[in-house]
Amino acid sequence: MPWPSRLAPAFLTLLAGCAADPTTAGPLLTGSAERSCGPTDGPAVAMDLLTGTGESLKLYLYHGRDALAGRRVFVTPGWTEGGATLCPAAGRGPCQPATGGVIRVDRAGAVITGALSLGFPGTAIEGPFRATWREVAILCG
Image 1 (spheres, one colour):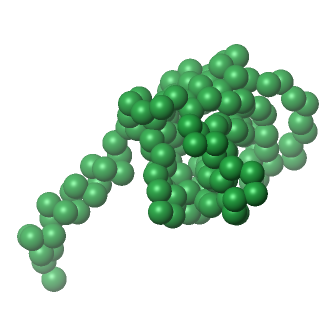
Image 2 (tube, rainbow, N blue to C red):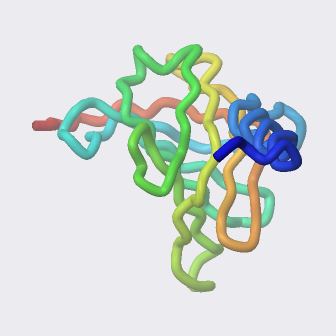
């Protein structure tokens, strides 16, 4: 059955939106980053960022810090490359996992910087982030 021509523009728009880089416009999200373990016990980075409304945005990137610079991590419900959760200010409800989005890492060293665009049930967060590296001892695997 041939592809319905009236659906092609909508499909292409959807694909373009999925591949778009996150914007650096919006409020700067700040916090900390540290070494963590991925789901297969490989290296990972965990970040805890604060939003302007007091919510905590937790990012999990399944790559070591040295492999993050210049990388885009796609967040999907299966958390293949990484994931994110949005936690309300203290005691205001449970954390919600991201439904999708992308995290772009520009620099990864003593400070990790980049931008993100993430969807959550009922809301979205988009903008730049800056996380200060905290050295912690952790053993994976």
